[in-house]
Length: 495
Image 1: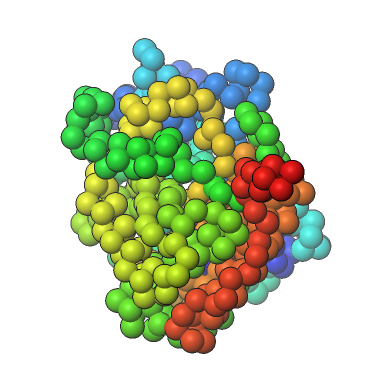
Image 2: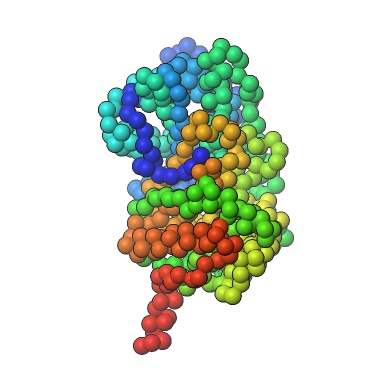
């Protein structure tokens, strides 16, 4: 299971059908057939992540400068599709996960999420179009997701399939407010599992109701809504800010961006290591008591350093909040973003850098509980009021898709994930490990400087991880474009 731009995904053309969610109670109210009753738990508060996301959508819409993003997943079904069974499986997914049934609204200054009663939901099949060419189908899906996913409108996702005589491609696209990247394999596993059971005439081996993200959000708010700046739980953040000099760790290479400006994006992906190379890379990491993600993170730090960045790596890293308990099978936005720092200065070999990465990661995990949005609001209130991060931020994400729910069936289901954002002012990179190797997906600003910088950085990183796989150590440094501020200082000295 790999993440890459939807534009890169080849789907065979066919007949497109979508299943659109509706509330039967709302229809009954409009026709005078009955009144909608509020289900138990209605009017609950959104999580910190959801509140900030919704607020940004509101403010950008009001300013005539809408911010948009989505996450999507596709998977394959062999043989003629049983449309009724798939519709039932899709409806089962929505009924099972409370967050997918939520409407978000601004009430009395707060963002409330009101879950619709599972029993009042229904799906309406709608024929969309028939496509004879893969390019036309891909262009349609890209535009369809952009137009149909709206943070301020319910429902917050779209579901459909491309039907052919002997196969089908199923797609689901979600607003970020209801899910995260690790929700995508959960979605695939549940829909495929229920679909296959229904086709066999069996009862699906899935719970009627899954653990609710709304319960998680409620507990998180109870613990951290009243936290204040002086609280000791913010000491890790404060110490990071003290050494970093500011709340957000800057991406240290030149992307050619201007302050307070957003840009169209480049969304690209490539393979860094094939399956065999990734296995050897993992062994090289384990030999120095490091996990593979630490090897990739350390390699990123060394490449940035060799390009003129600092010897001490400082960046943001998303970390799952699902833990080892009840939330493992839940759909929702279970992501906390945390700062991490470690020493990757010149002269340190692979084992020494891995020791630093391991120590930095361990220190970060010890302070994982404080929600990023809450720390941002308390420690950088002026920047919190903005609709985006203030400048290009150093960001690293890694997922091992071989360990996610349903991974044992991925060769058969062939799931893919896709992320998209309308605009950006920096760069974000996601790394995924699957049975085919190690892959990188980056979204960054569409400037000439960023294209050069990110292209060179990606190639340097590829050389670095391959060198580790070959010899168990870093390669010789390859010069990349220096950060703008460093380059200007050097030019001033020479002048």
